[in-house]
Length: 287
Image (cartoon, rainbow, N blue to C red; front, side, top):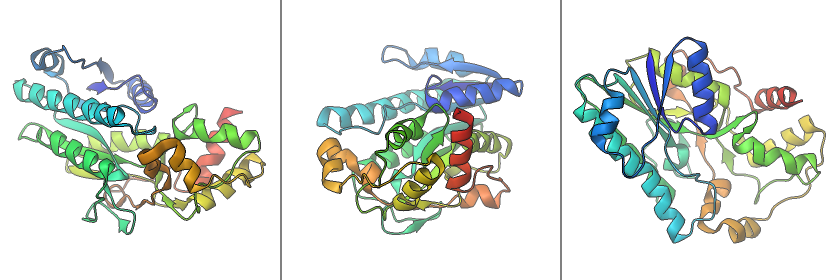
């Protein structure tokens, strides 16, 4: 297949590139800059089989007014241009996999893809607008799946690259009260799940890309300390996280208990269903 990836240089995009090229697919990078026309994008997409859109500035940061504008523009403007480009293609990709996030859900319920308990903050609003934009690409020729990523863990990048060093130096600890649920996924399972969606064309709409076993921040902290053989008593109080990240602290402090119902009911098998299994693989591979 010909697979186009927008955002190919990132942690997830790089892993997808390696996976698809190793199985014999042709992977084509797509960079959508402000001055690139929808017509030019359409020329690149025409005749390809799959488009994976991972565009968007890093959600982890201090959300100043300017940064919130960047978070929206980097997702919505790129996606809207992709949707326009697809409408111009005579032979568009049969599948659009568009990145999304579990941040769309509220912090008070358990969620699968049929949950309607959405958050009422900036992040939830951003994700819903992003998904709405992507779903406009749905047509008789193109189906759309929005991949609601949990926290992505893997070797050499993502959240784990920020989490492991403090533990290695003995400064590991929970954030806030530690009771917040973390919905996460191992990078290898994320990549395999994307391939699974491509091969299962009956699936469309929102799909949770999360492990079947979410974990509390406290349980995660203890597991990391146990596997890394490091202490875990340097807790980070909620007020410190809020001081550093402001409104963006909800990414770390707000609970998200999300389950991958659609993937599991379709027969997808997770290689790393538990945090311990994921952490063991990441630590042993890094050694």
